[in-house]
Every structure is written in C-alpha cells, then in structure tokens.
Image (cartoon, rainbow over all chains, first blue to last red; front, side, top):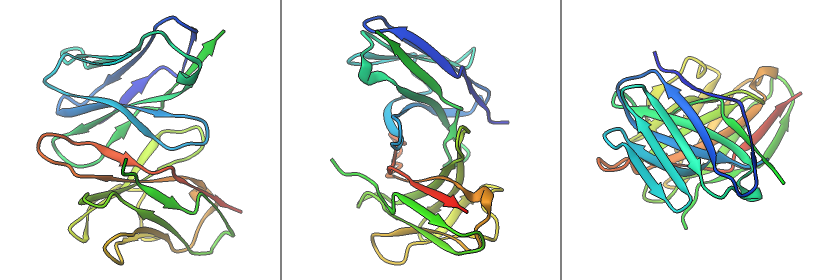
Length: 111
Length: 115
C-alpha cells in the first residue's frame, strides 16, 4: 500500500541546521516532494526529487533520497524564524496522478 | 509568477446545504485536483480531472461530491448536501504533468465550516 510517515514535531535553534525525515512504503514512487505550509496558508512546493536521484541541493535546502531504505530527508541550513511551518513529505507513483502526503512535521524555531 | 487561486477563502454553511468551491488553475495546465485537510490530519486526495473527465477519485469522493470545468478557466467542487464531517480545508491544485516533471501547484485553500 501507499503510506508516508514522518515525525510530527522538530525544534531547532535559530542558525542551526534542521533535518526533517520521512519514510515511504511504495517502491514505485516516481517523484518525492517537500511542501511547506505556513499558518493559515496553502501548500507551497519547496522542492522535489526524481526517484533516480540521490541528492538535490537548492540554496539552503538539501534533499537526500535513499531509495533502498525508502528514506527521504530535507535539510535546511542556517534555519531562520521564517522557516517555522509544517513540512509535508509527499510522493507520486507511476500508477496514477495523486499525491500521497505524510502527516507533516511542525518545525519550531528556538531563539 | 502564475498561481492557483481559490474562492472563497472561508465558507460557513449549514448542514444539508449545497456548497460550490471555486478554483482558477494555472492557465496552461491540463491536470486538476482537489484535496482536503481535516484539521490536524493528513492532506487527502479527493479527485483528479483531465480532458473534461474524472481520471481518478478516492473513496472519500462519493455521490455527494462532483467536479466541473464549466468554462475554460474555472474548476469547481460541489458538495450536494454537506455534513458536519465535511468541515475541512479544501485545496485545489493544477499540474502540467509533462514527462520530465510532475509538479502540482496548490491554491491557498478554502476553509469550509459546516454548522
């Protein structure tokens, strides 16, 4: 079946790196995504990685994919107060259109 | 930057009433979706729409739900007779879904409150 799991909370000090982890079960995943949701706002696509890649870097964001272990992570370097949000891991597969979301990790920034 | 827009941002309705949630997808996109997020829970897929028909729907999307693309720009979700458990944030998304990229853009959402 399709399932995406992630821890619910993460607290990080401002200026440190944040690492948000995610595991998924479906081996036919094609794309894996990280979405950001700020309070009261919609879902903003932060970055995505194709399943045949191991790593993708985009400014302060680094995505690592371990396809063997079905593990995805998002690293945010130099975490700022504006990074405070819920981060959703998500996947699509080669079977259909729908995006399967995790429950989201709430990132809290400590001063 | 092009974006998906949804109206209204917040809708309050009485149980049993019909509601229509509206979305304007990104203009050159061909694939359209509705998702919902009950407070504190996962974002759940409802339906996908392509070439003027439903391409996939979840078990949540029962006979009370329908979607329509009434003209070249709008994409609507209708709930015929709302129930308390339909209270949620409803997100519209659209995608170009080319072979090289599968990137869905989401709207800001409509918060539906059924009382």
